[in-house]
Length: 343
Image 1 (cartoon, rainbow, N blue to C red):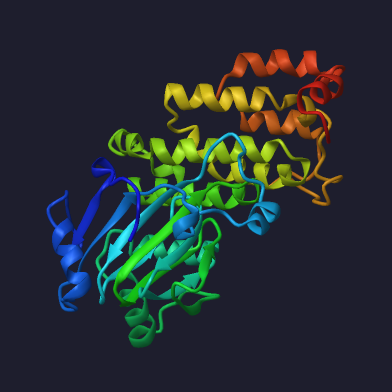
Image 2: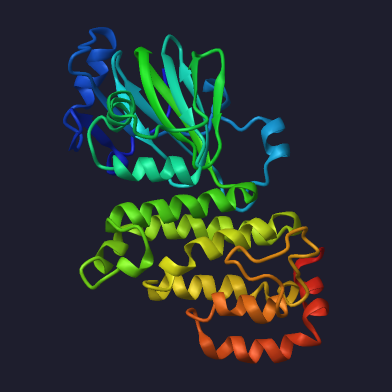
């Protein structure tokens, strides 16, 4: 049915929200033909090849509408989901996802946009079993706020579903089978990827603001290396294109208070290089020209934007920013045009 290799290192299986490694694989496959709706077992993250024969390729129309990193191949994976499988409300770590079921598999999707309101509610039920149900019960019984902007949609193998980065979603399997998807980062989603990184930081550390970070919470940042790397890739991609730079700056300012509390040496070096390569156009960038009257942090054009924005970068390396400020002042545009080729 699906041709490709099983990546056992990436294999995760779920049985009543308890993680196991490998053991339930055969049982999950058996439940495709003999469902146990009261106790479904499903397996996710089975690596498969991008393959035209099973429809796993990005449509040309999608590639034309999204700026995907040409230097990195999108990743693909499949899930084994017997009838009755419920994947609770979650986000996919800043990825944009294109997914389709195989053969007779049918899904029902509950989808919500990544607004501040929705991500705040998701944090309240993070790591709790039946998070979406808890939110529904709190809303109906206690008139608590509920998720906004939601839609329900049903998909089968005749169609695919596109989940923009940061989309909150819960998935219900009406008819068992395989779900295959492609995960990729886009320049258009850099701000949403920053939102997802902030969400993961808040959930992993159990905090709301960077002021709550302490010596007891810092070790948890080690679990976020993958999320930080994805954000760095999205940021670097977005900064290549003038149309996405405003959102890239908004996203950076969103996560910067958390990032400067703790950034690993490798991550700091990576972000240092990204911004160093973009200081040229930053020296000539103004929010007024971009149609925005103030920086995302609240600054309102009281000073030169470059002089202001470097304050959001000093935690990476204070010394080189002072040097770059003077050396780039007269040469920024010329150096940037040679480096990036367009504005």
